[in-house]
Amino acid sequence: MVTVRNAMSRKRRAESGKSEGEMKIQHYKSGKVVEAEMPSDGTLTPEARNVFMTGQCHSFALAIASQVAGGVYSKLGPDGKTIVHCFALVFDDNGNEWLVDAEGKYKYGELARVRRIPENYKFRGKGWLKPNVEAATPFAEKRLAEIYAEDSDCDEDVA
Image (cartoon, rainbow, N blue to C red):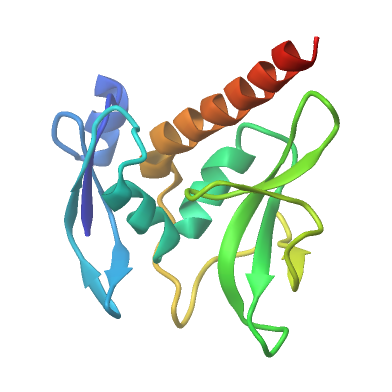
C-alpha cells in the first residue's frame, strides 16, 4: 500500500477513521502489492508516477475525469478485451482531445486499441486494485494544471 499524505478536512478524516493527512492506496511492484511514501503536495515524482502507472492508473484517470467532462478510456491488450491501462480524456482550449495519464498526454487517435469505459464500470475482479480517487486527486489536479499551463504557453507563443 502507498501512504499518501494530503490535506484532508477534519470532517472527512473523522468519517474515514484516518489519521491527520494520511491515506492508503495500493499499487503493484514486480507483481506484488507494495507500500511507498508519496509527496504531500501532489508532485508527480518518479515514484508517484510509478504508482499511477502500475496498479492505480484507474484511480488517476477517475480523479481527472471527476474534474473534466471527457470520461475514462482504456488501452486494450493484444486480445482486444483486457484492459491494460487507463487514461482520462481531456479537451484543451483549442478543441484538441488528449488521453492523459501520469506519464503525459497523447493525442486522441494516436494510440491503438483504445475505448471508452462506461461511467458505471466497476474496477473489480482479477488484477484490479481498489480504486482510491481521493488519494489520486491531488496528483491529478497538479497534472491538469501542468497540461493547461502547457496549452497557455503554446497560445502565447503563437500570438
